[in-house]
Length: 552
Image (cartoon, rainbow, N blue to C red):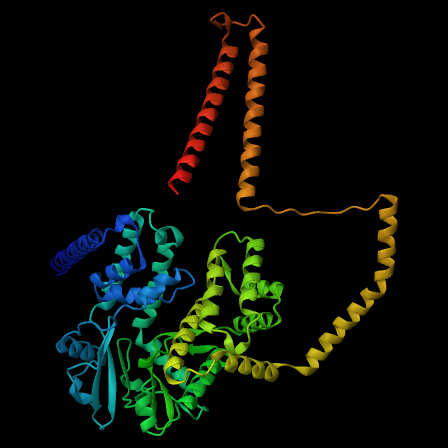
């Protein structure tokens, strides 16, 4: 029995492997054709990247949407272009939807649903949504994952890694970012989005955090019907938060809605450390006097330490304290390369000169955060994933406010909320104790100042004072010093070689070449060759610099 089964199993495995190899080869060829058609060898522009992803299909569109989150890694113009990628794709056939449902529920859909609409409410690259009715008559929406999407995306990510290794280092994108790192991050986020149990947990946590907020609502989750590939929620028949005409017809105050929206979002960030990272109009609606948050697949999270560091950063901006801001930035970020602290300090000083003099009501939060992220990027600093998600969320909230209540400034509400949070969290007894200790230390050191000043003056008058200087060089000056020292060392070595060879030539050492000792001849030959090479190299560099200047 075993002898008959084993060859059959091995044959099936071989056939599967062969099929996967053929599929990969075919897909790789298709990707290569798309890249060549868009002249990838001439570099990648934001528009070209968006076009390539659209031509490659739904899974690549999703990867592009995930890439748009990383304004801390990718240049802003690339993120802006990728955010324009369309989310609507051709829906999968209803037979496949039914197959996924029955496989996930392990029963016939008629055992759970009395009816389901075959036409989806929406269709995206990972899943599509259908309206249905349970056997008890309750209306629900069912989010169904596309059949085989996990394997397709895993295959495409692997192929993209291969293509990145083959991509020529031309064009600004290939030179500015580690594309392999970006792909790994995208795959991590995509895996989280494809696990609907993770989204179900997000809904539960979000609902718990906002249970005491009277004006906030979350769709009811049907856990008993939810699996890793199927998500069942309450059907929400609300008004889009940006449909101001309909809202006003129903008697709603759009200004009040805007204030409550911002208040709740700031609460999510500062109090809960768990916030909706994709609050675009499609994920926000109003029903029965409540703002309903939808689609919890993309959520951001900040630790208590990260929130405190960010509050310290806000305080440093208000005080226009560059050193305090630099300290907050270094504590918050991870280094992915050498950091030039002098350049970072200069960039942050320029940042404070731009925003520190503005009133709170005139500061554009998304713009200021983008400027700060550009500074981080140019100084080899990477922001935590939660902070980049926050930047995206703030940009969406700002866009919502432009439509529903353009007179509301988010920074005013945020500053007020941060102040309230600070006062609530502060321990007056502990703060008083700490400040008294600082005052005592300052007073003790202050008493010593006259004596220290007298000792320093005495040493100076006796000529015994010393000053320690620590010099740091970077950039072109460091390159100049390195080149000068290198040339000096090479010159000294060649000089020593010539002098040694000349001394040897005054002897009768055997063997000899052209009447001079062989070692002396070799020394002169090496020194002459090296000197000729250095002179030729110097002339080539001068010519290249001159040619480059003329070309510019």
